[in-house]
Length: 133
View 1 (cartoon, rainbow, N blue to C red):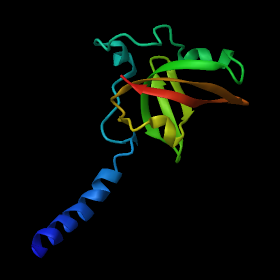
View 2 (cartoon, helix red, strand yellow; view 1 turned 180 degrees about the horizontal axis):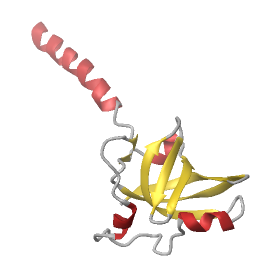
View 3 (cartoon, one colour; view 1 turned 90 degrees about the horizontal axis):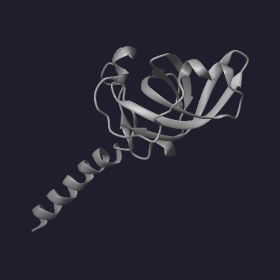
View 4 (tube, rainbow, N blue to C red; view 1 turned 45 degrees about the vertical axis):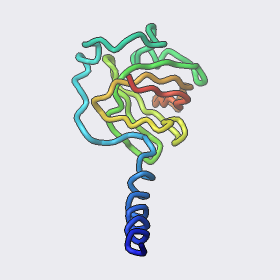
């Protein structure tokens, strides 16, 4: 009887870190597709059919609400990432709670909504909503 309880306790202790590790976020596994292939394939109806492109961001002012669709291709800092769409790349700031348990890899197409932040010639989107397609 004690062996069964000991085994169950050991199993629970070893399984706990595995369960705790699945918090979502960006996983640097895989290779992002070429930018020209982001339009290929059926992805279903999305709420950003008329999404902006990275190329349009320089003409917008700080604080503008933006919607983008593309691939998060790398993590540059703890909460900073780089998104690429068919027109270019932009930096993103994504807080942990925005991921909502979603796991995103470079080859996953995502849609995001957020606020544009401009500092001189650099641009960053502070992401408020993110969805993997």
